[in-house]
Length: 104
Image 1 (cartoon, one colour):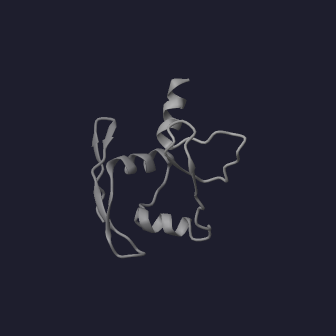
Image 2: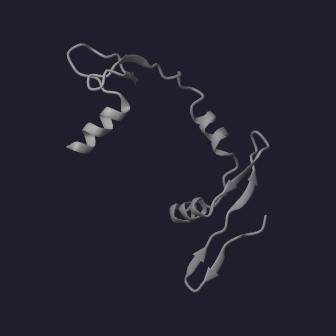
């Protein structure tokens, strides 16, 4: 493929590039921001797989996450958490948790 990087003075300008995933065969966009990140990190090769295939490969050996449903201590709504809640500590739904975190 041809290089889509242009030089303007000392600054490089990157343009979005469409690539084909080697895993699923679907097209995906290698964005200008991703290209800049790759350049800053010193990566020489373009990605060969789309994000969905990279994520699937990364999570292949992991067990699916278990969620527990409980009642929010603040609003009384449903709280879905990734840990087994105990009765000695309050549990908050996502909205109440964020509100409490931002209030501090």
